[in-house]
Image (cartoon, rainbow, N blue to C red; front, side, top):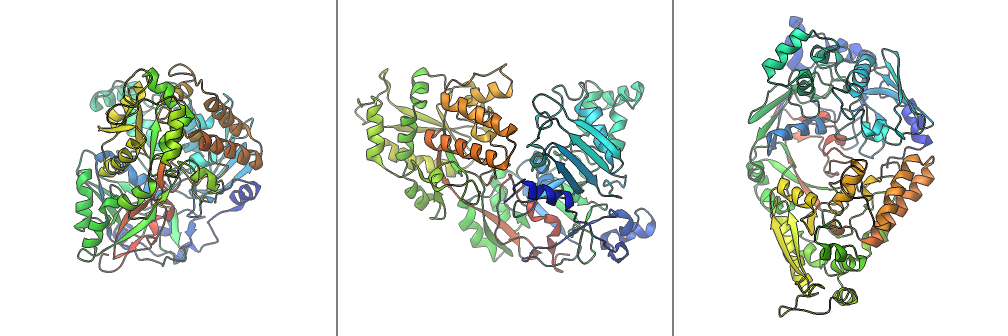
Length: 635
């Protein structure tokens, strides 16, 4: 597990995947030979960095061969951003063991947790062949992050400590230094994110769209040609590295997009200047190109089962597993079950900021939340919906996290109707209607409407089982499916009483990961959206938290950001986990739900088991898809 302790900081300072690798021993990629011979591309030894990153394959992998096209399916055009997540080329990144190591960077020196010196690889180039240097960092910092016309809110929050910006220096073409007055615990993990903190940009490309470098006449013509309001709109539209919508934007990822949207078929071709090679001298990625077919999300399982994808997990669910297994042999693929890394695969979110005053008072009473949890038969849900493959659990960290304690997972989740009814009686909910449904203090029946995003039958199946067991406690449940936009708007406006969604995004954290998800820090935390909006806006919108436990969580989150030792961060994490365990702000149902991963039988080096989640694994990203390869049948 990743721990940014003094040991790891030393590792980051010393670690360089580069070696005294003999560049003249590199093997030219077959699909690029014609371009090299014609002079359109330099030879591979001139395309990779001088201190090239040599990837050591895992024990379950084997050296590959170049060639082939990987087929993926996505449910909508904006999903092409998954290629940036899957490619997972980052300044520093997570390993499968969730350690941090330099990637695009040769190494990084860290002093006192506040001074970060980044060392670039000499000779590293963007996908168009232009050098990747400290100028790309300077352009981002001076011309984008600190340009009020392009960044109205200023630099990203992860770069601001106690309201103060860092000093950024560029000692030479291959060195960048960020220095804060106090430790910045966010910096490294943000750089390693699935949706990373971009602190560099291809300056040589973007300068042509920037008012500081381009003439007003040419910018005015670009604005008119592209139908934008001003030059900033042009610049922003061209600079979308995460969305991957601009084929002209140079990249450092293993594959670069060559198809302009809109389209129903997007092609990504190999980056000829990619910085990684294998131990046999082959430049990665092994696979020449990736093609993404766009289909309705509801059709993805059927198309996958028909053999139209070589590597597919997105839009697949456990309720597709039986169908996929039945078609696997006929269509030459394997169905693997990976683990998810969320704190709860599904969790109920009582809205503590609900507009309805009667329900809001009830939902804020911990006895009510505990009673609802005790009245859920998680064993039955496991049996009926998940083939006995999952664990009953609160919405908390998983056993794979060093912060795990059994009580975080198990308290208040046993199916105990007697205890649940006793707690509801204590709340004064003694009267019932002729259906056996308890009555609220104002005489209305205790009917809880659970908002769903309507994206799968799985949620409906689970809610039907909860409906049956809650009714035995005198609580009537209704579910209301809607689109995700409507779902969120009901929650944000306070019209929701309760919703169902997945749990903690990263449930295998260490103490060095930010614990903000445990405190009211975002309106997308559906148990307290107004408190989260208050925090995000700096108090200009939403509502200030008035529940003591929520206020303590916010204070603890702030303390974590200033903690000067690993031990202090551990203590803060445990206190925050303990508060969430005791208060049941969210009601976890199950976790460790397997996720189907379909792998073509001709595709190699994809792990048999793994974690499939965006954080911290970037789905396939930490397993380096650039090392996946096809056998001769598909090459």
